[in-house]
Length: 306
Length: 243
Ligand code: SF4
Ligand code: SF4
Image (cartoon, rainbow over all chains, first blue to last red; front, top):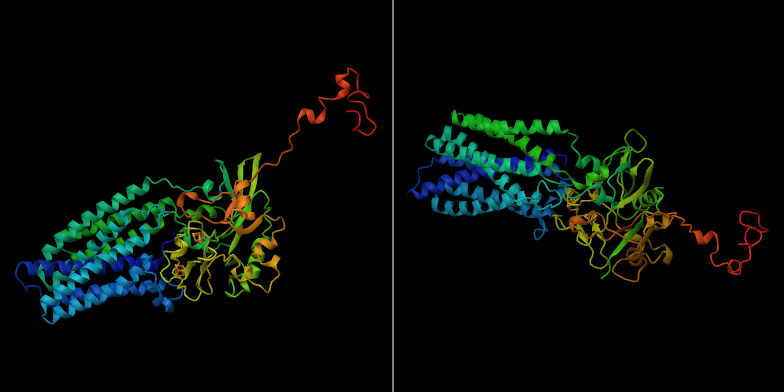
């Protein structure tokens, strides 16, 4: 697949925003469990606004992906069958609940905020599942058709959000910084493990479709001589990224370093802001690779121009 | 239940692209608006098509076969492109099984194109909505047309009659009989999409000449021990009568 920058941005920004909210709500919950009200209100406000801003940026990116953005309101209609429609419902709901949580917290309504936060957290997890399932439900994109896809979206989003929370806490509520830092490192380690697992799984995948099943001719030697168009088509533009195996491997090493190793080191050194920025760049590369790695069976029909 | 479909005979298709041009001609002026072209007379021309003819070479020289392979939406009986559509623009009609896109509802998110394993959908670069074969839904029910013209444009245009059109759920239809009796098959059966369109395989057309076709074993003259005249190899009066 050719990675679309709009979708790469949408999924990474959204993941970070969701992770940041879960980090905030986690701290609030443990605070409440230990007997109340030690979170700095300005930290809570900054984290809630940060989470909203990231989600809003993701939402804006999603519009860039549409051919007819003015009709986007139609896209919630088929929520019974389409994970994309479900995501379209979950995202604004998540943003509204985070805003409600932030406002209640700011007004000092801590009990009510906890309830709103619980709802937001539930919708947040649902949103992660929707985003992941958009890709994981396509069974012939074998690289994506795995529970690991959903798990990766969740863990990478949490790692990114916890790093952002560490950075915010460092300046606004230093009491939380160490706890967040440790949680971010744990999330990073888990995300690295599950992403590595999906890379290993995909390296060993055997495509179920072949040119033989594509045209229904049983012969070991089939070569395409014409694809029906000389100047390319939607099929050649949308499904080929044009990067060779070497470049893919390069991106893989880059995101291993930038999304996992470097942020872990920066977090350990107490530089959470730098860690978040480097990690975000790494996650963009990670998402680019996620799309580029998927081999669409339709490509079998577009192997040679003439 | 009706499931309209095309059956394409790869043994007959000569790769002339008449179906491609007639499809484009009919559908670019049809109710759904133009199938836009980009840069049609310049470098790298590109455009929206419902149907493409591809060519494959099977085998290795000198033992090769050329297979011309027309490809359009297969109107899958279990179409993966339909449930993923968030707007409901992509739908499968209950009455005749045609998979259609409502161009007024489509938001151009391209998710359905990702969800079609066959690459049958193309985004119109001018209208920014998803397009694909409609089986000429605006022709086949048009009572203003003569009955014989109520067929998809590609079927009418094909000079070799490589394209058959009909209801594959009716066991007596031309298409069902062709699928049954000539080895009709579906593309990429591994994904469980159950394409309605079928393809008929290439068959080698050979003249098989047996010894007894050249010389009668039961020639009565032989039974009587008489030698037929003129003898084998000698020119006969009309090349037929003696043997
Ligand atoms: S061929 Fe593709 S576009 Fe047509 S019905 Fe099947 S999955 Fe959908
Ligand atoms: S591109 Fe149009 S038809 Fe396809 S899934 Fe999106 S809204 Fe539906």
